[in-house]
Length: 281
Image 1 (cartoon, one colour):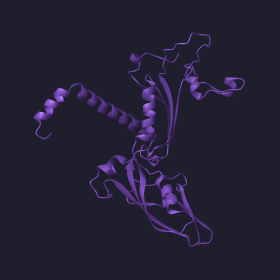
Image 2 (cartoon, rainbow, N blue to C red; image 1 turned 90 degrees about the horizontal axis):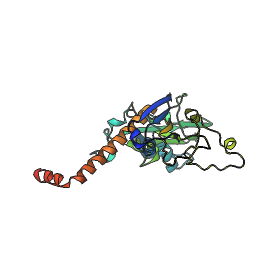
Image 3 (cartoon, helix red, strand yellow; image 1 turned 135 degrees about the vertical axis):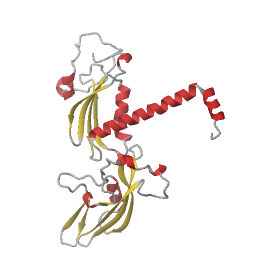
Image 4 (cartoon, rainbow, N blue to C red; image 1 turned 45 degrees about the vertical axis):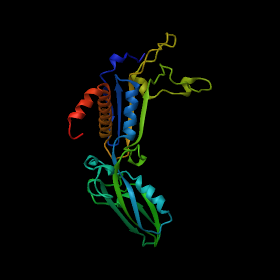
């Protein structure tokens, strides 16, 4: 069975199965389920990116309301390779926004010809050449709005740094596939089926990485999963390997903060004496 004792889970290993521009498929092994799930959650909600957070409408005669277009602008993925250079708004000393914590965008389009004029996210003009909308192979990006002859849209936007636990628009990933125990050896899943569970629930490709237990063998109630299969698909704002690395660093920072807090709690007298001797405390 794919299991192990806690002492064997202190040396996590990652094996990359495939890597391309927008996705990475890897296997995380020799670790605990809680660690693997923490990594998954960190990739979704803890990795910072840039996203449009403020929208000022100067003109909008399209059929879409201001709020609708503002929401679409906020969800436009922005290239965020240089996100670490920016401060969070709450950490910046400016009154509203500045170059240290934000990037400005403008969009001014008017349909002057008969028919429909499609406005794409690639038409957003950025004040920073390193923070621009993510575009597809055609170089157009996301459709923002469609204008008929005589209709116009003119907006000023401000993109800021943030994380997805504050709003989903800052998430660097579109989806994070996560699986362990593809043969259900641990019996964590109870499949609903009509006639035959194997025919109605086909195995994933990850099943080829492990061996199915003998159904007649005694069940080990103490066994724990130690191998986890990830498939991370990004929105294009960050490279997939960057998302994994940044998520790992966030976990390390959180664990470091927790360790310091525990050490301070275990030695209250030492910390009190240190505070009393420090004239700046």
